Amino acid sequence: MELSINDTPVYLYTGGRPFDRQLPVVVLIHGAGHDHSVWNYQARQLAHHGLAVLAPDLPGHGRSQGSPLPTIEALADWVEALLDAAGVVHAALAGHSMGSLVALQAAAQAPERIRKLILIGSVAPMPVAPPLLGAAANARELAHGMINQWSYTPASQLGASPIPGVSLTGLNQRLMERQREGVLANDLAACNAYQGGLEAASRIAVPCAMLCGERDQMTPRKAVKPLQEALAKVPGGARMIVIKGAGHAMMAEAPDAVGDAMRGFLTSA
Image (cartoon, rainbow, N blue to C red; front, side, top):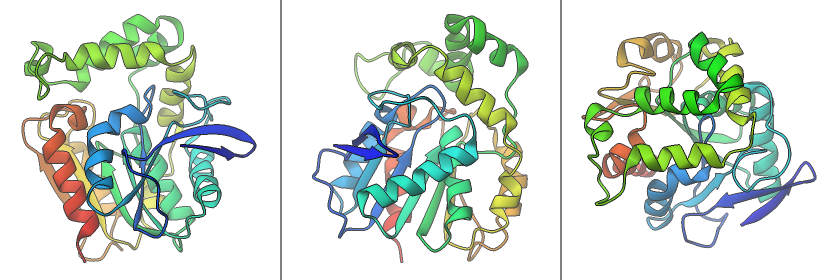
């Protein structure tokens, strides 16, 4: 469906079901240089199990108009504007990689509106390697190759896929190529510059789950600990869920495991 947010047309995928704001709402926020399609499987699963799903293309990404927003804080403000535009009072937020920082910041900024939080492939801070920043700005194809190399496990690099006949790295390559010039560089710079993650985490007081790929090279498990510890006010502590055998691109490499973990957390009391 489409909405106008800040006078700009925005596309949102609803998981193949009409959006019903009377159901529990979850907003799925994609990562750098991506769009809503990274959530295709999980959005459908959640939408067909009693949840109202909003998976937007962030401004300037995918089918949404406008320019990409330059900071995580600006994207968090935009998420709150999205809730207003959709007529949603309360929602859960789930984000992957850059999207996890946006979800974290938005939950800290609007605690009265956010019921649950899922951080997938997340660390804070989230520094980006200078060679990747440079390539994203000046040599997109090189940057796409780096991201594919670091986001997928060796098995996926060799063609393993949960979807017969589909190359996961090839699919991601085409997804990144579809984004407009400058989008990836903008997003990676926003991740690299964001320093408010641990302070934002210290203000989160709603249930939170953290999904981490067992073989994630971009946001490895050992790097997650500071963020997990900063979520000290989360009831019972942030719940760590390790996705076995998956890398950073865990929604693609382990769609069932990620979808089941998200649904279990979102539908639990």
